[in-house]
Length: 265
Image 1 (cartoon, rainbow, N blue to C red):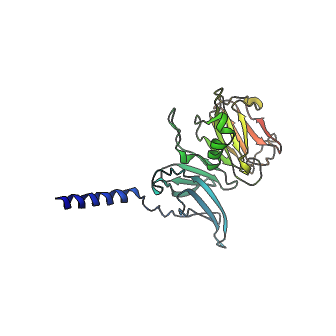
Image 2 (cartoon, rainbow, N blue to C red):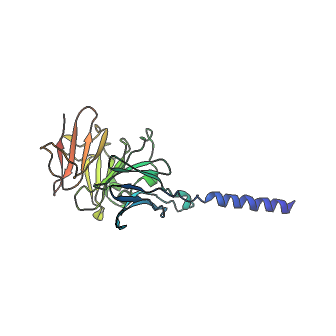
Image 3 (cartoon, helix red, strand yellow):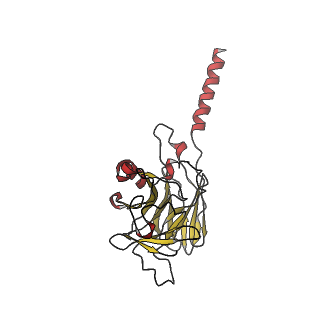
């Protein structure tokens, strides 16, 4: 009887150990668009990235991180990994879907990454792996840690792009000033994680110092063709901030600071 119990316990323990390990990630079918093959290697559990290869020369053109996975050291690491599940091209953008159903859109010209997932429930908290590494550092160690919280009042709650035109990917994330409750945007530049606050207690143009009015935002690529003479040539990607059926504006870097360009009433 004791032997039977020991054997049963060993089998149960083995089953638990097996179930704690995640299955191998999917082999994602590459997609080809305008002579470039886009591949998801799925070989790094801490970050999901894609590679772009020239179809004719088979030369790698670039590599881009789509999202990262925050690892809790007290838990089994591999069960926390999230990989890319599928790729597709739509309207000259690469659409990346994760194993958890989250969708990311990559502008193939600017390589800006935006997340387009269902909005979180009121009062909901985003999972840790949803927050870019640069933002985590700024929250833990930088100026954001002292005065601001990440805000999830608009989906997506962060956008990635080259906002100051230095050729490196920056992160813009929605924040709330703790002392006043005012909402705004923190732009975290890739170089030394320098942070610029817009709104959230810091006024800019007609947007004021509280972006509570904003209900949508997106990236306006510097390479985007526009017929409006009033829109300047951007040094970097711009942010288009909007209130539905009302005002919108572009926020862009003019070489010295971020400025506000009103687009509607």
